[in-house]
Length: 293
Ligand code: MN
Image 1 (tube, protein in one colour):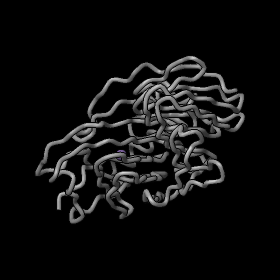
Image 2: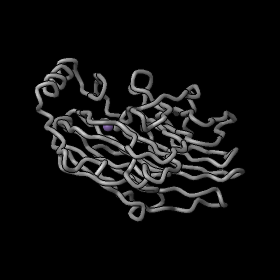
Image 3: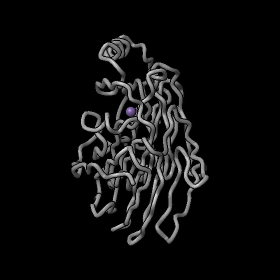
Image 4: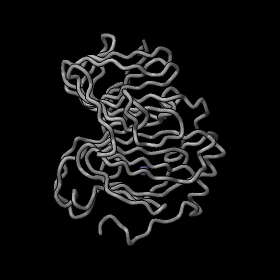
């Protein structure tokens, strides 16, 4: 069995831009060494927004050295970046953006969601890249809800969407740079579920909403359980209806140097990233594709 080593304190909320009231459930300074290849996870909402004429969100900003994975549960997020990619991420959709050598992008409530208002609920996971891929070509995977296989768990325990990796023969659509599983689970109160995960892999159980119990210990809303890399079994009892991300991956075992939106291996590489950004080498977003239009 994998041992539950640690449960993070219930995270408090802060705003990212004026659009995303997030709780930070995986934190780079606190967790990234143990969480590799996962770096960071913010969970936004559920939060109701009144109709607005100007979309809320986060303006142009850079990323280098890792991937951002945006999973939308409710509402819509619009995105555009310097590779020319843009789109709207709606309920059930996932955007897997490989920043690699660098992108500038912005992230706003979609024009339709802004106009009509409603409830926004989404998660953004940062996945580290191996050193060999940190300065590779940026890439973008727009993964629609219909592309993500959903497996019904035994005994009415709930269901599991395979975003990346594999579960019970179902393959996730996301292409990754190191071996990992990103599973998105909806669990029913009173249910029991058991999982087999690879020996030696990082294993994190992120409770976005609800409560699950592992080995007699409750992991509640906005908490993350960190498990041992040794062992393979993980058995969960569901206390309340829950939305959970079960993340597992082969640790990269490479040094992490982090500054704001840059995650590299050394301080020198961070300085280079800042210089490249300041001198405009990340490019510019095109005004005519502004999300307000
Ligand atoms: Mn971003």
